[in-house]
Image (cartoon, rainbow, N blue to C red; front, side):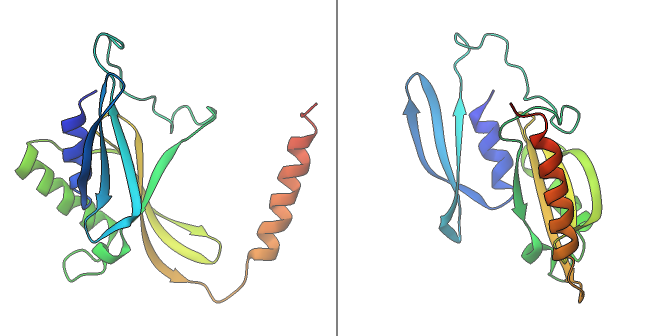
Length: 170
């Protein structure tokens, strides 16, 4: 909807404009992390109003989780949460929200408040935000690794889900 607003939003997480360019009739920009320009690139594209006269937000994919395709971007913000003032994901989000209010006069739109979850044997705090256009952004904060191995249990569940889903494929 508004590429400058999207650039401002992602700057809150350390992204900087690497290039602004034209993509056919659209304005586009590549954003990279300032300290690691080769590690991740986000491409933003602003569709002109004459192509997309009504500029809707992206669908809420937490509400419409049955839709296929790219769902969200996940950022590991553990190193930002492990400093003296941001020891939890909630504190980090509060700090980013304060920065957003100071710089842009906008509050973050939180889709899912921080909660703990397991990914493999690792325990994370995770939260979901909406970016400037309503796309989901997941924030992850690593907590610990559990000493027991869940991989066999997870693989059994994974294979069961796979065999259940192949019943419907023709």
